[in-house]
Image (cartoon, rainbow, N blue to C red; front, top):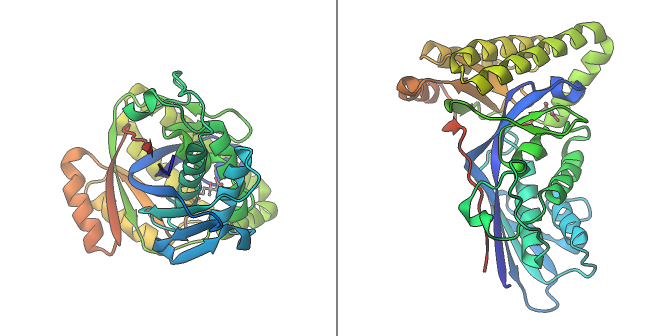
Amino acid sequence: MTRATATAPGKIILFGEHAVVYGRAAIAVPVTNVQATATIENAPAGTGCRLSAPDIGARIRLSDAPIDPLAVAVRLAIEAAGIEAEPDWYVTVRSTIPIAGGMGSGAAVSAALARAVLSHIGHCVAAPSTAWPRVSSARWRDQPIPDPETVNRIVFAVEELHHATPSGIDNTVIVYEQPVWFARGRPPQVFAIACPFQLIIADTGIAYSTRQVVADVRRAWREKTIRYEAIFDSIGAVAEAARRAIGAGHVTALGPLMQENQRLLRQLDVSAEALERLIAIAEKAGASGAKLSGGGRGGNLIALVRPERVDAVREALLASGAVRVIVTEVGASNYELSNS
Ligand code: PMV
């Protein structure tokens, strides 16, 4: 094989961020409107492995970058395939997922790279036919695929480089590409979306460091453990209620639950003025509820919007300074993997 291409989607956390780091359950869903794409092509003998990420202007030689996250993802995948010598490859990774915005760009880039490496080497398993992990693209059904467990392990290891104590939710939702009910230390569960619903994802344009926000929450938790544990319990209860509502197709229950989750996130001090302003604007324009998604302090918010209000909410957010607005339907998924 001379060329392999693999993709991975973005993600949002619907309910339960931060509390998930402390053992409560959370819900995350893939966002296939944005994605990372990795391509591997054979290079002339002696070239070594060269990585380029044109979106961030990065050009890296694998052998010169021991701790670069892109290089680590490639190296771990090469190791997982049992290859010892550095291969002669051109590796390119591109992404349409906003960086540092809470949409899982780092995990998606790692997943696309790991899949492309394993696929190029031919280190694949028969496509699983069970519901977990579900194979969502017709293209997948009849061909071997990179083992999702292996990819998940690699992506988690790279996430640990990015932000020290990841809960594991980002890598799980991105690798398995379906809505997940996730609690640390327990096997993640897929759950059915009884009735698809529309979300608007709006970017404040403010980049943030998940590592920093998670560290701030930990410091506050150490100082006010009883209070923070109670907030985490309440967030966990909101996530439980949301899971039941999503499973039963009670979409109207989700708006108030998002509002409640946002109120609790505010108490954790992870919101930001820009987020609060855009959340208020989305709700005024007709969203049934809105909240930040991911680490907070910036990045993206999500708003639950009935189809007839989508245009009004999108326009209001853009007119009020959202730098990017994505409309997505929760319930759809799409996975691309090709070899030639
Ligand atoms: O900022 P993101 O999208 O990587 O989301 C982080 C979610 C947290 O719950 C804040 C941290 C974690 O590891 O789960």
